[in-house]
Image (cartoon, rainbow, N blue to C red; front, side, top):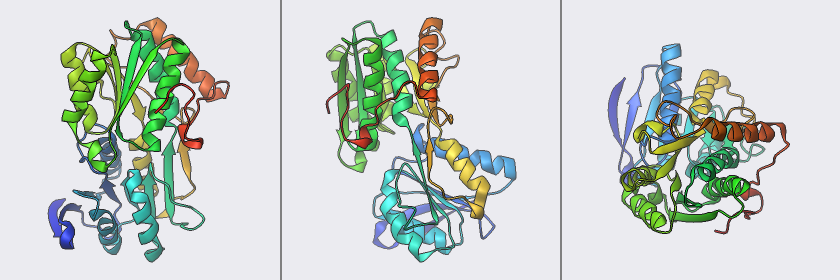
Amino acid sequence: MTMMKHLLGAAGVLALTVGAAAAEPALIYDLGGKFDKSFNEAAFNGAERWAKETGGSYKEIEMQNEAQREQALRRLAEAGSNPIVTTGFGMSDPIATVSKDFPDTKFVTIDGWVDPAEHPNVLTVGFAEHEGSYLVGMMAALASKTGTVSFVGGMDIPLIRNFACGYAQGAVAVNPDIKFISNMTGTTPAAWNDPVKGSELAKAQKSQGSDVIFAAAGGTGLGVLQAAADEGIMSIGVDSNQNHLHPGSVLTSMLKRVDVAVYNAMMQGAELDTTTQALNLASDGVGYAMDENNAELVTAEMQAAVDAAAEQIKSGALVVHDYRTDDTCPAATF
């Protein structure tokens, strides 16, 4: 594949990696970059798995600003890419607009929402973030020595509040008296890529007693994990397995199988089934990471307690409240 740069009007320049075939799949990363070690990188890993297994190639775009969303979609659709996979809720409205103009092209919005009744060529893929977050919230409370745990979110939207709410519910289930602190980085997409602000928030939360911080903030979260390691407290990664970034400091990572969603979409190709998907614990769409980098931080008793809760969630015996259903959280106030 060769790297080409296309000037897209006043919006600026997008990098588009072009393969040879006319009907290749394509992937558009959300703001924050392909190698954010989190959400976007998980999508990249799914695409790479598809490419290695099939020998195929795909086009990809890393956007630099909001104005490029619709332009990127149109450029790929006009070039014949199918399906076009996107990450992040910010692509929902552009896809709703562009998909009508390309009815024979399949589009995928991961973490967004496009009405399937009005847009039959669009697949919406969502995740039960609250279920995975509940498990790492339990682990945080079990590991905490101060009785205070905290959360740093990226952009203040219902999706990220759902992470925080699930985390708080899990922590409270272990310790009803636990103190929970929550901060969001901002209210614009820039909140996903501000590691300095993430570091500042983590240090402020430590000063309030937190000794385990869960970051669901894209690139901003890298600053949280770094600050936690520097300050001698624990952190929890998100989306991808981030345990290896600071071995012995990252308690675990809440896994969100964006890689699987991208891989599955590319495997189906132009015959993609656009029935809405909701990936949860029962379907292995979310979970938590254990490896050699956090093995000494998580005792067998801790893991057994978390795994028991996971089985209850899968069976329906334990229902974790989804913040997005009513904009409320039984275990925290935002």
